[in-house]
Image 1: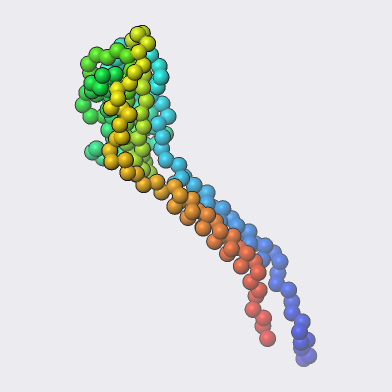
Image 2: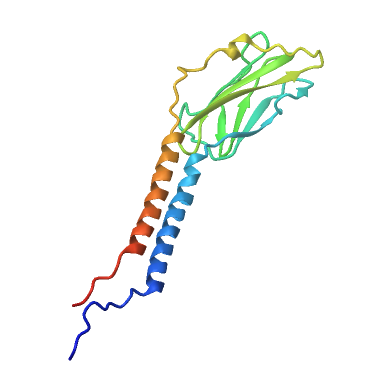
Length: 189
């Protein structure tokens, strides 16, 4: 039997395309499944609403977040202060899923400042503040203590690391797809 020297059969194209497509799909899937880690929970609503005026101080206020909050002791703190910095919070806040309810007591007129800090479902501490008015006197001066830093001010933002990791994973997926597409099957001699 005669053998042709130097003649090779080309690799099947469908196999190369399927390998390249599989690598690309893998890279996209890794990027998509990593993307929820980029978003932290956030405050999406309050009652009373920020910036509104109510006739009298309500018995409680509610903060609604975009995700379920951790319920560990000390994970959620709410301070409510009138314009003279008198505390209005009555007891500890109650966390129920995505809602935090803080009981209030006392009397207030003018600006009421709410300072909050909680731990979101991704274990990332988040904080913020808002104000609403009580009564019709139009006073909007807030408690000076509300403008002071809360806690030690140190937070770790993992977002740049997560984005960098996502870029590396997608890049590795694309590189693997290209290398697999170029890989030639071994020759049988």
